[in-house]
Image 1 (spheres, rainbow, N blue to C red):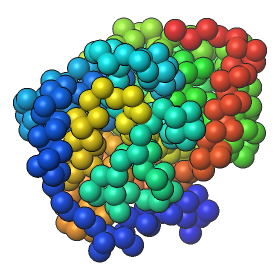
Image 2: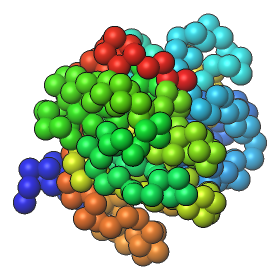
Image 3: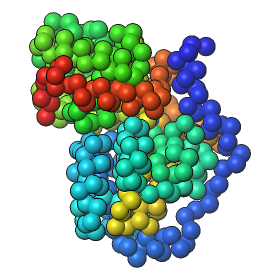
Length: 368
């Protein structure tokens, strides 16, 4: 077994080992009633085509029609979510987020800054220990791997690896799916590129990734535009580096217009975990807790799986026979994930520091 595969399996081993001690309780009647009295839940940075969120949100609305879901800035990045909580500490109005969904590195940062409040969902034991805060301030919800989304109308030869993206034939074609100074997805895209050069995950790979994108930018291959399915379809960003679940969802949305290909690169196969948390200043704390119960319920977890994400409770749910075969069949081949590397929190933090601090000076491309 390879080291990377061992790391991949270690993330979810805890799930299988703790499945016998799972709490299956539904949210309490008291919590549901308190949430209904609050009457609103304010989310932020949840695009409906991200990880199946459209269906997950719709299911919450159907289950609790008394609670209005107020969706702020769907296209915001993790750093924007942090700033939104800071900016609205004393605001109990509709611009104050109740909950956040951020990259792994942002969870401990927000806890340290006093921006989160603890809460443990009823299925807490099925969330692997290495992707949750022991005190319940933040907790992993889903993960995917970095991939390339390719517009086949404009890109004749599909790139198979990071090194390919530096070739002259991809001039003016490659974009990140976010601003690498603020977007967790883009920050980890730089880490993956650095790892593909052979650099160790963390500061070294972050710096190697910056040098890689500096070379790409100098060659004229990098496009300083935030890449999405729309910019890809329009031809502004024919190749976008993004999470596999976003790429697969875009493939479905585009439905052949244009035809696209989703590629998990041969090297630098980086797995990324996103975490949930409740704002310490949440205007609707009970609605926020009920939202978390929904996300970590069987229904919520399967909603993410339908959106091509691997939910935190994936292994335990498979073992319990709770995952329909058609959902398993819709995922990319398992071989694509065998090289997946799950960076430690320390590696994620070190990479984030290197990338956010060095992008302007090393790469010099103002992504917007």
